[in-house]
Length: 598
Image (cartoon, rainbow, N blue to C red):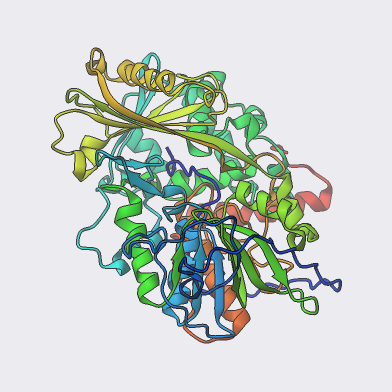
């Protein structure tokens, strides 16, 4: 459930950044080779060429494909006339929170921005559309957590006619036997020191898990101070699986199976035995443990693509930027003297034509799988160690579904986490009648349900997956027994989401790369000076802003750096515990004493 379903690969987004980050990038003496350009047959002269509007030179087209002007209101293909300001040209590959965030800030600061997106509907992993009958379809539900300060600031900046998010909501946690517990809205409860507040306010709630099992998590909480006590400690926690850490901390089998394992399956989309302990600690701290209110979550009142991304695209275009859909990057051209990227080649998937986009700086805002494809096909990237490291990373499978029922059925909670319903997958379901304006008065229930770590489910037919959703929901809410599905859609996203596997940290890229004018953005990059961690729209957006600042610093083209709001600071008792842990680590290291957790 954690940030619902970052699903759909080479479109991952983000943005944020206050400081003009300075990164020392080692320059490689040997100049990278330029990628061979694609040679194709020119289009017949009678067809209009969009090259000028694209801000690009056409390198060819495959066959005599008719090129027709797209509707001006289509976010997939609408383009503005380029400003062609040499020295301030920026190409951004990938939309979503990271790509749109970087593009919006840079275009508003006077840079000549071209954003290339592989999907026909630019919107990153949250891209959405409507069916022929007008029903909204989107790749899963996206939660907005209490500490999403930069995302909330962006929404305010867009000056939308209505606030696009719900109030903070309660959530239910279920297993096949029934309700396990619920997550209250902590910000509406008396404020207490973190960890104490969460325990006090959830103690009176129903728990299927006995108190003695819950208390076995206490030794694990001590590692929240230890894992950041030194760089060496962090690296050791990264190499360890979360399952191994839970075992060393004495977490009971029942607590692990009924609470921690299912929570991580929907939070980081993988079981604890296949997750880095460091990544789990970072994520739990950001989403639930750093402050009492951190687990409070609200939801979009409609499709994010329509509510937030389309207004962002409009702002980018109004500032002179271009957002081009159906553009598949096919290569890069580099300067043999400086090693910098001087142009990006991309094919228009709707026509087969290939264009070259001159640039002074490049931002990759795609996910792991998309980046691996680019590295594998681009010699200029493949010869760089930091880009080759990306090939060591992994991504996870996600399935998103939406079901329309013949009658209205009330649910106890608008958002629900399912544990133990699938052997190896996590799942969530959401009552869209309670969350989204479009379905508030609908005669039948509309349920959005998602599966994470869904590799074993991908081969199933749509009908089999829909039937699974119906059975799971009915076990939680018996009112759905007998309700008929009148319409449904199943969306599969193989290898779409970041997998924070044990030992993956060294292979994740920094935002500044070994190519001097090329930068990275997305929730999977490392070294981000911000407290948002894990699979996070906020982290993705922040990295987009930081990438924009890195571009501005590199090009020296002026403008105001993007402001990045950090998470709330550690509470005094947590800060004191971390300081003590660092001191204890230094003392223990001097004596050759190992951490009991390592």
